[in-house]
Figure 1 (cartoon, rainbow, N blue to C red):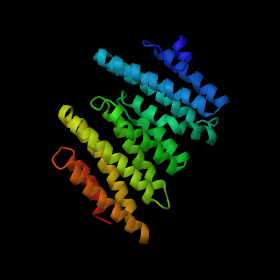
Figure 2 (cartoon, one colour):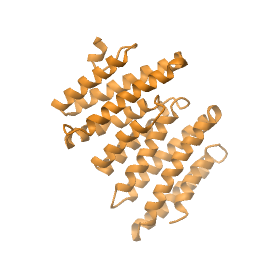
Figure 3 (cartoon, rainbow, N blue to C red):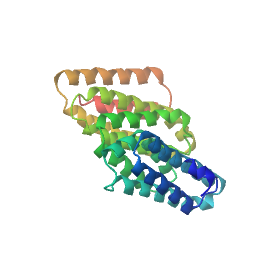
Figure 4 (cartoon, helix red, strand yellow):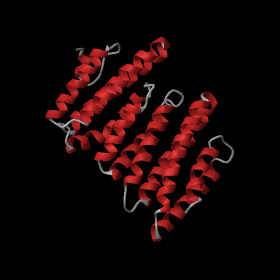
Length: 267
């Protein structure tokens, strides 16, 4: 095992065996000491793998399938750990703080999003929904530091995750809906123009994810009553007004405002 792997980073040209062995070591360490430090080491390892694999894909497109399989195997190994009897609630809570961002980054190079989505869904079902929404929104807010053109899947995975977690909040939803709407709309406004210019198909995929999210919020809004309904009505009106005033003539207007108005229409 290379020295870089022992420090939670993988060497530039790691093999499948090295990646899985290093990840297994980190997960074993975490089983013994499920604290935030060892959880952070797992996140760093996945980040390192994602960065290296993305670089390989850019350098030699003939290896795209191979590197996608490496990423998929690593994510599946994480999911098996999360669903194992040795992974208790403390462990899940510790991993949920940093892992969603790393999982989404690694999911970018997979042809199949299912492994990344399964992990995020596991956190949704086992952790506090309110905390989970904040964590996913924080990861989504990093859109300005992510290479938009090559990483649209990163945003799609997170938007999908937020849409799955949000309905699990049973009471006092308005505050969390506000946070989620701001994060998703901010991401759409930032990324859609870039994607539309370079990869129109990816722009459509991201918009579809945002549309599913807006339908989820719409369903939640139908069940709100009294003061919370009034709060959401005012909130969505402000979102709509802000998006019309700030971006009146850009390609990002139509998906952004459609997401807002599709929700506000039924309140």
